[in-house]
Amino acid sequence: MAYKTKKVLIIGGGFGGLFTALSLAGDAEVTLVSETDHFCFRPLLYEYLSGEVEAWHIAPDYRELIDEKINFVRGTAEVIDFEAQAVKVSTRHESFNYEALVLAVGGVTNYWGVAGAEEFALPFRDISDADNLRNQMIGALDEIAPNLAPQDVRDEQTFAIVGGGASGVELATKMSDLLTDAFQGRGLKGAPHILLFEMGEKLVPGMGEDIREYVEKTLLESHIDVNLQTKVLEVKPHSIVSEHNGKQTEIKTVSTVWTAGVKVNPLIEKLDLPKSENGLILVEPTMQVKDFENVFALGDIAKVENVASQLPGTAQLAFQESDLAAGNIRAFLSGKELKTKHFEELGEAVSLGTHNAAVLVGGNVVGGILAREARFALYTSRLPTWHHRLKVGASWFFGGTAPKPLQPLGYS
Ligand SMILES: Cc1cc2nc3c(=O)[nH]c(=O)nc-3n(C[C@H](O)[C@H](O)[C@H](O)COP(=O)(O)OP(=O)(O)OC[C@H]3O[C@@H](n4cnc5c(N)ncnc54)[C@H](O)[C@@H]3O)c2cc1C
Image 1 (cartoon, helix red, strand yellow):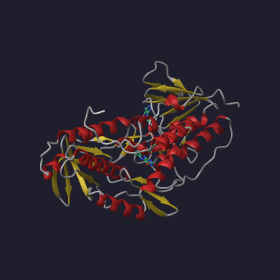
Image 2: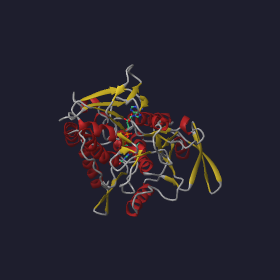
Image 3: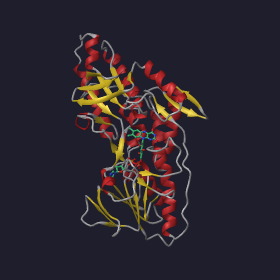
Image 4: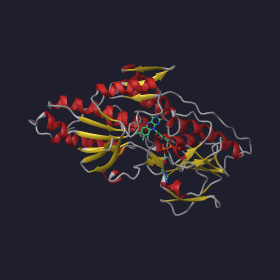
């Protein structure tokens, strides 16, 4: 092919960038630049927290996923010169040149300027965040004196989660099951207290009514303390201040986890590109950045038309866009016509604790253990590369996906 020696530089190795790189491998000179040494399949991060899956399942090292057809560079893209077609990366002296550039750096946690949130709330976006949270849960359990009264135990075991979207709900149910199980395993009196704060009127906004009803029922059964129309005003190291109907409350916590929003990566904020009101890069239906024909943008940083309303900000959109972007980069480099596509909702699936989930199948909500298994099967099929899918599928099939109890620190 005439474009085999053309340089395609991909910034960001998440759902958008990694899948574009894998699709283009061998067709052009592909370089993938990413900040970490591993990919992260975030939809299963809750299962990593609970020990149902292991780090190598959902966060494989890039070197396990790619071969010599992709040049992998670990580093942070810092400066992009669109005129010179060059990108400066933190770990290299020389800039990288390109004939086609792909921007896929994703989002970062948005704390919305809430006092203390960035400083004291835990983000939940990567393996290290899940490790921190799990250690905090174990540390708090280890501190409970054996004869503490149930009400005092509840006060010592209060965790707050901010954001009632799918992330907050999935995290709340997982933490509740894990802690409840640990209470039984350690013979503790009382029960843990999981607080969920949502500013809006409804949980899981953007999801259908049927699935929301199932989610609400599960939260009720799990005794999760849901606070709707409640604004978090401040996060402190061991408490959270909120306001509901004009009344302020401060509650003591072990820690607060923040799942209440995503904003574009700081690199994108610096770039002089056409953007939407909320800072997303405006792209043509071909995934090319408006007025920049050799620059493609996708995933959480891009705003494209032709998208089903529930899809923006999801892995399934970034994944579908990567396929179109890769095809159009091939077309662009070989002087062919570029294509467009309508991006479809591929189905909803929510994890609801360690033994439950809800999936939407043919318009109907299926819940329970069967839905949990269906979700695992669905996500196995979406992991990157056949080789990795087979390894992980075999590990889940033969080794199982049972959660790992919150053992005391230092226990092996
Ligand atoms: C906990 C959690 C659960 C989720 N669950 C689901 C779900 O169930 N279903 C669903 O559809 N979506 C889910 N999402 C959303 C989904 O993960 C994102 O929409 C998706 O990852 C976006 O893909 P992306 O390629 O735009 O960015 P990302 O996947 O975030 O990848 C961006 C990559 O760029 C790298 N990077 C950032 N800045 C730079 C830089 N300057 N230089 C080099 N590299 C850089 C990052 O390290 C990262 O590897 C979840 C998100 C979270 C946080």
